[in-house]
Amino acid sequence: MRLIVGLHHLELGGSQLNALDLAVSMRDYGHEVAVFGNYTDRPGPVADLVRDAGLPLIAERHPAERLARTMPARPALSRALARAARGFRADLLHVYEFSVALDAFYGTHLRRGLPVVTTIYGMRVPRWMPRYGEIVVGTQQIVDQAAAFRARPTLIEPPVNTDTDDPAAVDGREFRARHGIADDEVLLVVVSRLEPDMKAEGILRTVRAVGLLDDPRLRFVVVGDGPSYADVAAEAARVNAAAGRPVVVMAGAMEDPRTAYAGADLMVGMGGSALRSLAFGQPLVVLGIKGFFLSATPETVEHFLREGFYGVGTGDVDPAPLAADLRELLDDPGRRAELGRWGRKLVLDRFSLKTAAQTLDGVYKRALAHPVTPTRRLTEGARVAGHKAVADLLSEGARRRVRRILG
Image 1 (cartoon, one colour):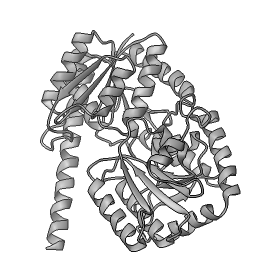
Image 2: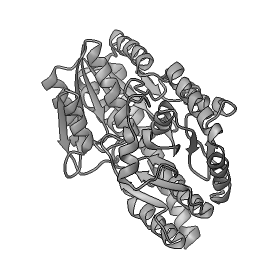
Image 3: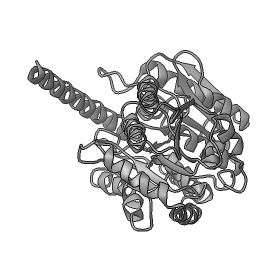
Image 4: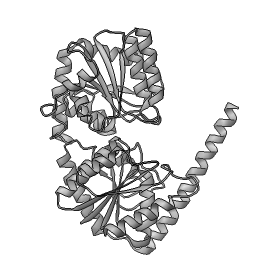
């Protein structure tokens, strides 16, 4: 089978890294795989990772990453995907996230009937998405929600390459030395793209919690870059100035952050990064939005298995409760070691890349076995365009009402 994997951008992020791991696994299954991605100014670091993995890269420059509100897809990227599919002689497109899914649907699928598999690692599947076709999601909760209005999605929890993400295979001492972390200090690390929608809030709250603790044993290193970098760096500078020492270190992005995971004593994070933390045998506090945080333990694991390594809180973003949880782990190295062993076993048993690749290969076979007639493609295309337009108008109306209320 000839397969194109479509990414919504080429910057570092959990979705992109998961897609690349699975693309390499599919290549190892014997499929011919190329990676498509769009970029604004220049290809991001994921482009180098794709090339390093030995996969062909089809990079398309396009200034708009988000969907336009006046149309269901971006015509330029729909045409680019169609050209890539023709040039590669693809049998199947596997695209990640909403925007590229619609670009693929209104491009080569609508015109030629090329099968499209979509992975959505967000918090929901919108009702305006196509009702047929194979969709992959990351939590059982989203499977159940989406199955109420469309063909049932397949659950593939964000996979972890447990061969490379292995504390026995990576030495974290160089990372600690580079950032001036002493052997007797407890190193807290987050590895994340710094973006405002889902991640910056929890990372900012962690910076503030570390400031509240003001414990000379604890250092916090933030690994990542993105639109919210300046906000996080400003809060880190405030905490460091109040403490009179470098409590929080802004490390920037790392193309290969494995040494950061291996060098940590304690992690905070979400999604794929949370699972990589567990794979490295690190105790973990999972972050979310609206004040959510929860330590990953045998007692809380059912929450994560159903809803993913993320969460939505009550809206209380006070950093003091998070500081109290971090204090308990800081004071109990035995508990940290116990949770680290448990987390590594959990990932090996449930989240390995090998298991995910087996499931995904079955998804591809189902997609190829069920071609869609031109009539159904056209009917569904009209339905998706209408539903998305209504959703966008309602969203715009809601924003106008909020603006009126706020004056």
